[in-house]
Amino acid sequence: MATTTAPGPVRPAGRPAENGAPKQPKRRGPRRSYLPYLLLVPAIVLELGIHVIPMLVGVWMSLLELTQFHIRDWSTAPFAGLENYRVTFDFSSATGKDLLHSFWVTVLYTVASVGLSWVFGMAAAVFLQRPFRGRALLRTLFLTPYALPVYTAVITWTFMFQRDTGLVNQVIEQFGLVSGDRPFWLIGDNSFVALLVVSLWRSWPFAFLCLMAGMQNIPGELYEAAAIDGAGFWRRLRDVTMPMLRPVNQVLLLVLFLWTFNDFNTPYVLFGGSAPKQADLISIHIYESSFVTWNFGLGSAMSVALLLFLLVVTTVYLLVTNRRREHA
Image 1 (spheres, rainbow, N blue to C red):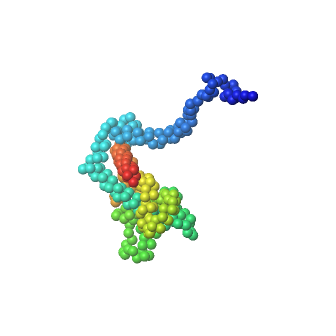
Image 2 (image 1 turned 45 degrees about the vertical axis):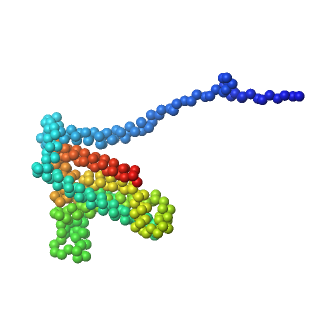
Image 3 (image 1 turned 120 degrees about the vertical axis):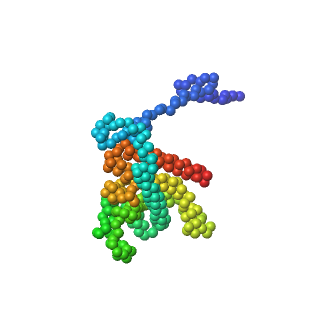
C-alpha cells in the first residue's frame, strides 16, 4: 500500500527558514521629505518682508518722537517710550477727542456697511437660487462692482456726487425728492451718506458671491422635506438656509468687518485725501496724523492701537462663534 507525505512549507527562493518559519522582510521607516518646507520658503520670505518686518518697524516708530525734523535720519529721533500712546489714549485732550470721534464714526460706518451688504447679498442670493431665464446675466451684472478697480469705481462716484453736474442730484431732482438748492454730497452731513453708499455698492457683491456659493452646497432634499412638512418660504429660510450658511456667514462677516474698518482707498479717493469731520474714518485720521502733520511717531502709535483693537475683536468673535457652533 503506497503512502503519501504532506508537502512541507515552501520557502521563498533565497530566504532560509528559521525554526521552520519564513523570514519576514524588514520594514523601512517613512522617508522624510523636505520638499514641503522648501515650498513654504518663498511665502515665508514674502510674509516677513510685506507684513511682519513693516509691522515691527511701525511698533519701533511708535516709541520714537519721529517728526519732520528727524525723518531724514531716524537715529537722531529721541526715544519717547510710551508718550505717544499716552497722547493717543488721552481722550480729554484735543488729539484724543478727535481720535475718539473718528473711532465712533468708523464703528457706525462699519456696522451700517457690513449689515446692509449682508442683507443685499442675501436677498440677491436667495433670488437667484433657482434657475430661470436671464439668471446668468443678472449674476454678471451683480458682480460688476466687485470686479471694477477701486480707483475707477470711486472716481466715477465722485463725479456722480458733484453738486451741479452730478448724476445723483439730477436724478433726485427728476423725481422731485428735493426742493430748493441742490444738496452737497462730498462735504457736510451728507458726506457720511455718500461714503456709505459707495462702500455698500462695492462690498455687497462680495457678500452675494459668498452666500450664493454657500447655497449651492445645500442639498435640495432638505428644501423638499421642509416643503412636504408644510414649511413656507420664510420658514425654510430660517430653519434650512440660515443654519446651513452659518460657517459661511462666520467667515464672511469677519472679512467684511476687517475690510470695512480698515478701508482707506474709498474715503481717500472720494474726498481727495482729506475727509470731512462727518466722514472722518480712523484710517484717514491716522494718515493725516502721520503725513499731514508729519508726526509719524504719533501716527504709528495710533496704528498699533488700531491693530490691537482688531486683534481683540477678531479673537472674541471667533471664540463666541466657535462656541455657538459646538453647542449647535
